[in-house]
Amino acid sequence: MSGPSVHWDAENTHHILVEHGDRNISTAEVEEVLLSTDTVKWMTKRGGRFKAFGRTARGRWLIVIYSGIDDLRPVTAWATPDKGGSRHG
Image (tube, rainbow, N blue to C red):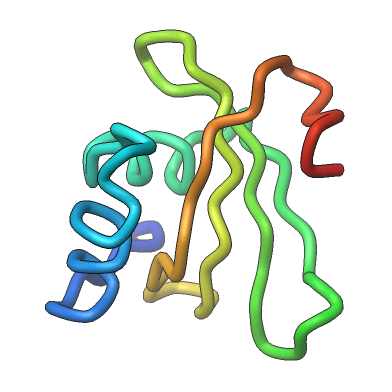
């Protein structure tokens, strides 16, 4: 039995790497957060989307908005200055 996988397509790759390239978040970092067992995940107020809060291998705290249960499709991501996520609650 395999676990969830992360689905990248032209739209979400462009959004995270190009449109928000100033955030310097790689697809690998997004995957680290989404696939980590230490990441906290919950449903957002926008139906069908989830929020993940976790730390990358480099120690950066990220918030990732995504859809899907087993096929996780990142929508957007940003860094938060501390493990409490206080800036983006």
